Image 1 (cartoon, each protein chain N blue to C red):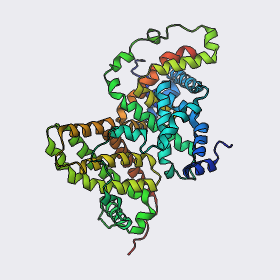
Image 2: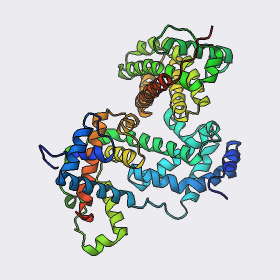
Image 3: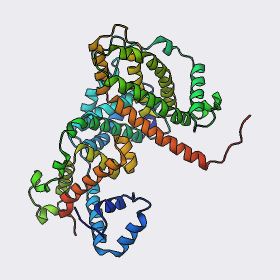
Image 4: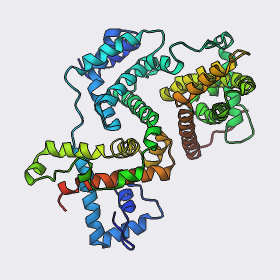
Length: 272
Length: 189
């Protein structure tokens, strides 16, 4: 590592190369580079090294790779559940894992009303003037971004409490069931919004999350320690908490972007 | 058959198995190369390819016809790679990262100093790049690849990997230093 006091540090040079020098540091870095031959040389050397990385050809799959991929893939395409889902649920399945019929039959009107409610409740902390159903349909992306962060925060909290509960704390699961039921409804709405707005990655995580929430909500009253352990293991194995955290973070970023974009947009006159 | 023929995607979305197979044939090498770059080994890359196709199949109905299929598949593959890397993170955490910082490349299985002839051989430079990438931890490699190859900002990389921005920066700094140590002999000073 280059040890310098007056010269630019390695970190300065790397951030400069990637164009990620902090705004406050930019004048210092630019001025120094303009006047220091040693740092110019170091910067050039770094650029050459990293260019070398770019010139390395990509790894080639072996001949016949596509055929092998298809041979492994095809049997799984029309299985009742995918390999990933089987992995996350376990081959034996969770005895209470069923799509709750009341949610399967949930009507579109109720869904839109709840999405509209969420959007109104969560929009910029302003007075909750709930957007119209029409708005919820027109702007599913923005509604999703605004609502999903709050939902994921609450879900993370519940999952964390569950994962950290002792397996003999069976009442912990019972205590979470009502909360899980509430979260399922919102989760499903957000997942549907994600699907509509093309956020496939988010929809995927929400789908996995929904299954776990259903397991919690529908767990029998006489759940055993082993079953609670299984559930905790399943949450851990799927990295569900981590994935939820990542999506929550992404949503917050998108929400910021939405707000910034909204700030740049001309204000629409209020509708009466 | 055009590589980006949207009609293949449309037919696959309608459940045409032959069309989906055509997509597998057309894009598997591309996503393998991507997965290999992200994960650093062939076996993991093959698993990522498999998972990526399963997810693509599952989510195909959500794919918007006007979007570029390869771009969509690329994103799925990156996410599958990150999932795999994350699932192994605990194992890596048990490894002392400082240990990976120590010692020149020569102590890590790349001990033959290159002759000018070898340096001139681009295939060998490529090997050396692969060796150098092999020195990175899984997280360093993922962070470096997402920043350097995928062009994500450091903040975006951190969000993808579930790391704070400062930790992401340090992963990238460590990765770049290791790459520089390994590859400096190949560039004119």
